[in-house]
Image 1 (tube, rainbow, N blue to C red):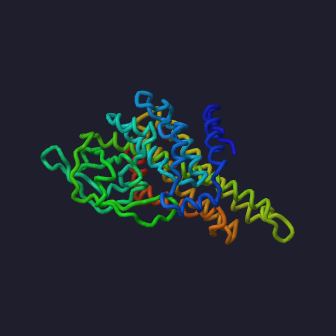
Image 2 (image 1 turned 90 degrees about the vertical axis):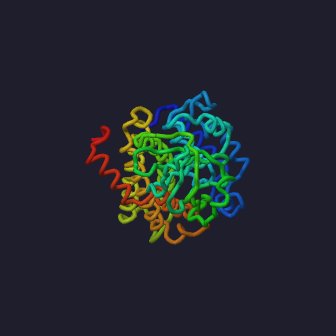
Image 3 (image 1 turned 45 degrees about the vertical axis):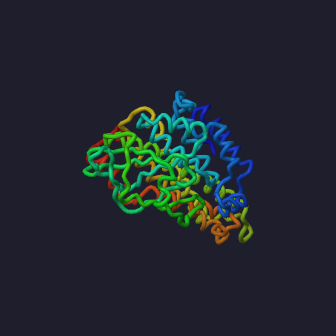
Length: 365
């Protein structure tokens, strides 16, 4: 499947990343990684770092490749297409948020050199910070779930200050959070941990961040998650189309039946909604700091489309699509898990309405 929105260089990057994953990722590999102790191979991580993926959109001054967010999005898209699990997406999201905020070059240098990182920024703003009077802040709120927390070398906490006037960004390490971290079962093959920040005192690396600047940083980071979900949509649609042409029932491929063609048609529409919106958001995010609303739309559309497509694919494949013997089951689990990590759907719709209809932000309409 060719994305006509891509430049020649972007298409070549996507092809290269896809080929790398295709060389070793299949259902058996994903099952083995899911059941392994670490959840990913250190050797594969080193290869991804050597290819420059962790710092592809970071500036050259910190050892990055001076690439665009769109190029980072392509790496994330192929990562999602392969249903691959590793700290890559979490690290890229952390790097993107910190780079957008500025002032965290030592951490960015470590990420560009291959260091793993995790971002703590609850999608529904459930954790907030309050000034403690000595330059530190005390955090409050219920536990939050963080991906690949204990595997990270650096942890960034991007949180609103009570009252909503400013945000802070604090940097810490998994070791300093060890007594507050508990591993929990994951719906998909990403490792997740429950982190209780209530009562923790932190010294911010960045203080007085404007809410709009924090929102823009998170929007750019979230576009990488949206890109990964778009990649999953593409993979599931392609395997469903192939199965509909190969599976014979009543003397003909099931794709010849109108009901199945309708299923595939709805999947194409859902994919286009997610992919075109995500492509537009990635392009705008590198050009205009006011374009946060389109990123929210892209994240919502990608999550909804991914879930819709995998549910429809399960119908096309029949029972085999939800068994561990078929790679579709990895997408089946990842779709809902990734959508949930984007926060409550009602909150996302409320944010989109406020931005586009009430405040009329950006130039989407």
